[in-house]
Length: 470
Length: 117
Image (cartoon, rainbow over all chains, first blue to last red; front, side, top):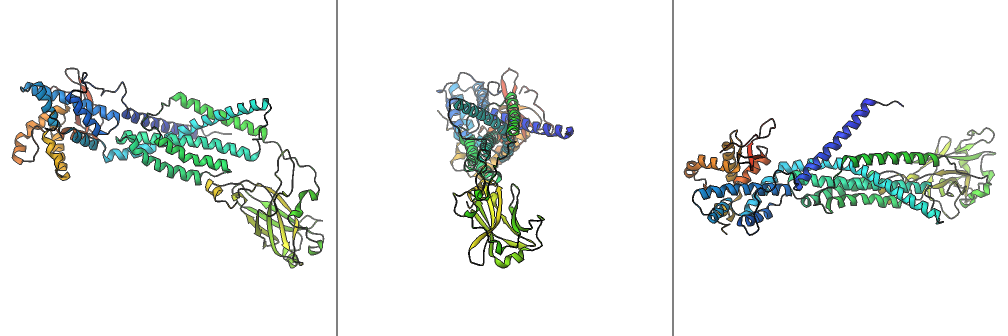
């Protein structure tokens, strides 16, 4: 395997630069939303207590200011500095101390009005636009970091569940087989949903905190808009964007993704973001690598088993559940009908029935049109088949069902009868038997041939699953 | 406590938004003219504005009281948010920190020091 090193370096370097820029942006906003010990604008006028008219004035002004904590501290420190200068000047002009204080405060105007005007000055449209742009950028970085963190969390959960299962097995508790196909898909779906939910929560929280810091608005003020955007964006993605094998559990976990995003935007949004250090990122990346290698090893060791099918008799297929076999007199002498299926994972299943000559195995010279003389209302019927698993080895029609899962009219095209089924859009489609049936001259329905089996899985989005016919 | 004695009190008692906008624009121009390439703190800017506009404001009757400082910091912070000014906390001659302003330059640079005013 050759590696395009230039592309790899650019790819890794580009993503690294993107993540570092996003983290820098978030940290810068976090500093503005809180006051740290190293801030240059820590209060510079010690000794003021609440009974001091200056402190009372500043308290009323601060109440109307409604800016992030870093900006509030900066404004207060600047006004204190201004008032000290102003009072000193007034005292030099002959004012008494208390008169100088009153005059200096009076010259600044009503405290609430000053706070309102300062807030309006800080919360400019330019800063709001910068906040929106910065929020989107930080959301991207937060999504990537959250995805890595979610992968680490999902791996940890998988390890814990595996350990619990091992302990329960040792003490003799019988556990369901999670290595079967459908259970495996459910497990994968759950892990992916956990990773995406954590990523969505991180993305939204990063966006809110960054937007608040850059736009000089309180986080709870902007959180509502980001929560609405998260519902639209992640909700659309969860319902329509995630396509694959679905299940009720998988759909429920996918619906949780936009809810996690909203929670990330609204729950305790005033609290600062947890510090994500480089070692946390490194550990998450290593965890993801271990997860990928572990899954690859697991799938390699468990994917080699073939379905064990014992020798069977035609009667074991229970094909008479569909309809009795067509009398030979109504079929071309010596020939029989063979049904084939062709499907992809996410595409329709194409059914094709041909008349086969038993001597040559090839399509008989007789076309289906000749066969159709004795038949009408020809259709392909898809019936539930026996669940095919390595243990049971069962095959044939599932006799628990008394009617077909779905039916399609057979259309004559060339030498064969054809139809298309959307099995990938059916929730209950798993093991299937597709049989060609028709109404004979006596008015009864018979089957033409033994049909063919098929294993299929639902493939689509959560919305496809919810709106599937069955 | 006399907190409501400020000259700007009348402004919040019914003056229109248009009048406020005009006063803000006027004060913004005065601040930009006062800075003129220097690094100055808020009080120093106000003193320079007062020196330059004592006669002008009396003659034009624009309604800005000589000692009215209610628009000073809203204007300074608005100009900073609009990228017309840049500000930094600098140490003064006495060693204490003061927030100083200067006109924003094309090439970013940190204000050096606050001159004695």
